[in-house]
Image 1 (cartoon, one colour):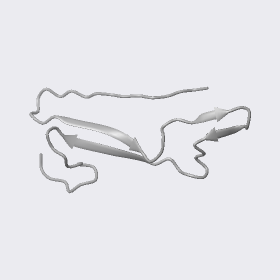
Image 2 (cartoon, helix red, strand yellow):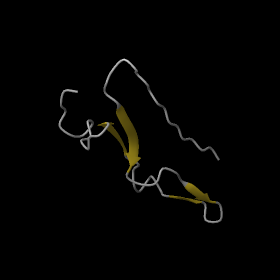
Image 3 (cartoon, rainbow, N blue to C red):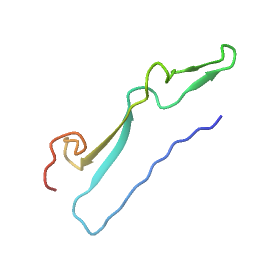
Image 4 (cartoon, rainbow, N blue to C red):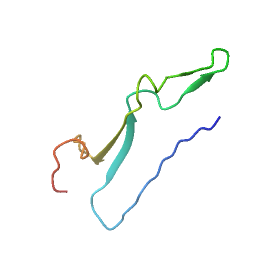
Length: 72
């Protein structure tokens, strides 16, 4: 079974703005295979996995990716 998960951090010490971001999903990020019933849970054929990126300026609650964009 292959398991994959990753994270990366970008530091830019020349700018005064600090950003933080992550990716959320509509269902769990992993599948479990049951060899007794030959099924996986969740079944992505019945419910598609949707990845949603989010990006925030530190000390702000406005998601830059989905909210109204403003000059930083």
